[in-house]
Image (cartoon, rainbow, N blue to C red):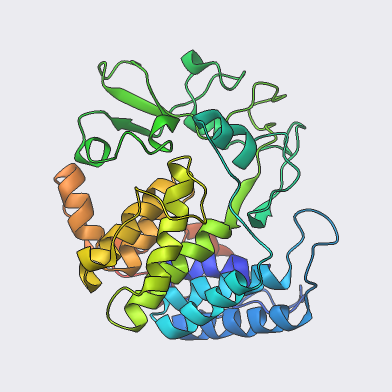
Length: 344
């Protein structure tokens, strides 16, 4: 879990103070470099891979497969594509995981991300929630709208799409993940869409929904493998394309491991266009998963994507978050003059 938390920190703030032991007497720690943070993350994950069990003792406990999956993600982020490919392949070749079959939009909502689920065949590492006040998932309140009646505590609908956007219009209607966006007029016109990916009509409070947070599932492994195998060899591979098609087939309600008419063809892609295709697939598969910005950032495509979507140019400083003033105040090992991220 230390590696997991530092992986979130380093991607959003770069170097941060490293706390590697419980010691309340030494609270003032200097800022470590990005390289030092990643070295600790990889060291922790390699130790976890070697020591964690194959199967969780309780649903939600991490396993060696969770460690392998996160290692693949870390290697992908660092541009170590061969290592990312090989680690993802270990998870695939274990045959321990498979995508949950679906035939409808509702299957996605209930059988893949549903509030009643304890675990599924595709779960690798999820943050677990329960229907109790202050112990449930609050994301449903953030994403839902009261008119959908999919969450009985209304919703803030702070995340939305527009039916006229290039992103939405280019999304094939046969993809059931597109159907997870509902047309709702909440004051910005009749073309706005809000997400119905996460639903819980029996939630007990705004932060009391039972849906788990899917940090890493089998589709993560497949899409990491698809991307890493292509970037390691400077072009898409048959195995990488099959991993990508496996995810796509499920989205079109097809058997995920059988060839289908919706399959993409290897001859249609080169290294650049295949990467774009994988990133698009990740945006569909992991919608509301907190991965899109990090994907665009690590592939150098954030500026172009934001400009196309909003007409705005990203300032260089916005690729990292500012270190909070409270952190500077309470940690005297930090020097605001030199340790704050550039531009803040």
